[in-house]
Image 1: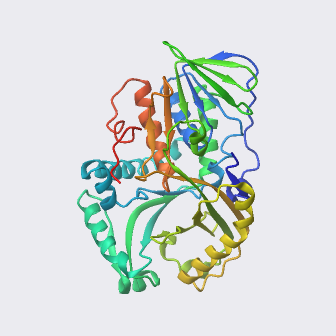
Image 2 (image 1 turned 120 degrees about the vertical axis):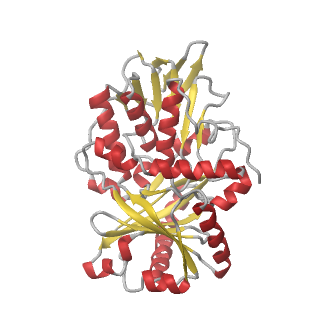
Image 3 (image 1 turned 60 degrees about the horizontal axis):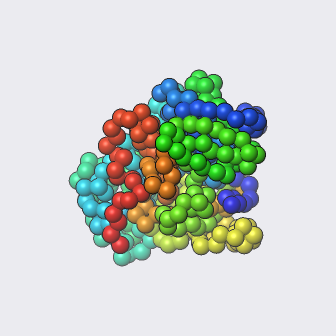
Length: 407
């Protein structure tokens, strides 16, 4: 599957990335991680840190699939609002999901600090904008639901929003807890540290084609006919997973993004706190800044999955995103310098899939689908580590494949 088109901004910032070999002989380990994007990198790092003998296999170079196309927003908010999620999976589990996402967000600072690398992790606030008047009561209900579980969030009516942020929308929810990160650099540094500190072995240009479980473990076979014997396998295969997992776990879409020129100091001043901005409109719209002062805008999701058609739509999609941004910030003219499109996945309830499925005995899945997929990936790494080391994890049941979802 072609996961992206265009030129993602993050790849232009890395000029000396580590290289890794192809697998050239049979080997064995405790656990194989298939996929070296942000999910696989987090899982491998956490497993290696706790003493597991880990092998990572990927047909691409690390993080050159979906991860390099991510816009790196770190939020606890789930694509499905808490009020709506409560109706789908029950209030108790919905609250658990939001608290789990909030707690994971809080872990990124210490994680990045442990890597001794500048991953451009910057604390931000976030602003969720109502697209139309009918969204106002929805935002009020959402504010109350979050406050009831101890999440700090402020409702801003149109006048308050205009006075505080200079933005014209019917209302907004302001949240002080969010962040932005360079997801490509984060994933690369995770893999590099996993190799250097914890003995994780990484093999690229290595495509897994067969999965042979038995009573004691699994043998995975590559397209080159080589075998890796292990106790367990982690599928961190992202948006390519539905190609081989026999269940309708998600809906695949395409999403579009661009990064602008570097803003002037005066232009940045008009964007209070350079907070993360996202909007309730369909199709999706969101915006953030980068560490060097650019604007990164994304959204305009559609159902197109054909790579040629997606690439052909990219210029018009970017133009639409520019217009939407300029309605919010008419005094910040944008000139897109890097544009790209990528595959994106949505689940029915907006939650990830983490854990086991009978179709793949001895296998774990780390599928962080959704707008806050990086946060989900960290949750998945923590859950899978506990499952592997046979330790209880309070979230293992929450994101399982057989969870009940009410339509």
